[in-house]
Length: 478
Image 1 (cartoon, one colour):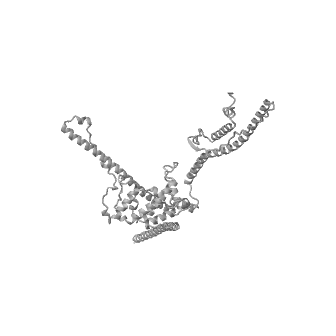
Image 2 (spheres, rainbow, N blue to C red):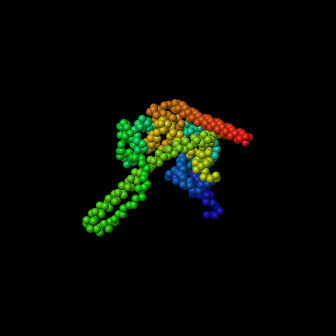
Image 3 (spheres, rainbow, N blue to C red):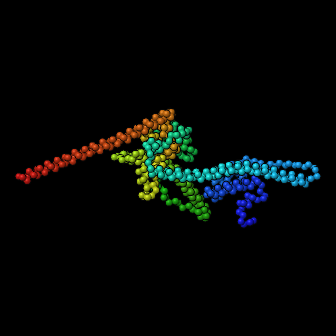
């Protein structure tokens, strides 16, 4: 092979390659060059699977409709006139010309089809790179949004409260089922012992089965004292760490046991079996305690969310005091920005709390608080069911109006319409704004009263000092 001729030219123009194969190879080489320009290193085409593997990722390879390019127009002109050789040569020449013309026409059509398919495949392959670029840009925009406030109160409220209603669906079957269970629990919550028991994983295979068993038990009793102790319900008592470091008994080796006399052998054998069995019992207790600890952590996380919400509300109040807000900057965005800003370990480091993270956490906390409000702030309504987690309240699949419908369903057992749900949310939001405004007014009122009292006391002290000074002057004159 001539060293000056590159390998691609040899493959594409080889004498053994037919026209269709030659065109196919040229198209493959063009696709390869395009993919290399996109920055890909490894390209594997598996025709048997209709997939193309690029840098370890598989893409579907659309099937191209095969067009037969071997149209043979044989014009046999055997006239039998004694010029056989000449006629045969002319016939062969005509056949070759016809075949070449047909091949060229068909190859031109195939070339057009392959150009279209090549462009479509190139677009499909490069689509992954475009998606990556879009994701990077989206992440960049999200980081930048962490340092900026929303442009309007309405946008801030939508993002802060629960997202756009248009992206949220209605109430799903599992959500309604847990709502129905909570409604039944709310009716019998006075019968539930405190702290609420939790599920024994060795008795119940799922939290739903445990919830139904708990509701059935509450429905069968009249008072809390009748609940009693049952195998399926575990007491949520924290582990006692003081008993964890007990010294383990020494187990006699099997060989030493066989060296003992017959009487000692039987006695020591039974004692060894007992010690091993007791160790199994301790491990089993730790196994059960691990479930109890997880349940205690679940309940703690719910309370942590509400604690964060209460502190955030106080930050809002401080942001409102003698505030000098920029246009488009809401109290909510101010408070969240402060939380994110002061979560930085150092001035130049990345904040531990992201805007999106604290927003989702506050959404969960607000929903937890709403559920508590219909139970007179009784935490048993949240502690009773082990599948009522923070993630359940974080979910964006339920918008604010549908959540109000769900709360109403838990409270009354009746599901109101979506229109009514929107009215309930507006009412709730108005009440919250009024409470905050009233709280602020009370702060200013108390501050004015305290300032007035301080002025009165200061005036009384000055009068007292002046009176003492006039008496001293009288004594000196005498």
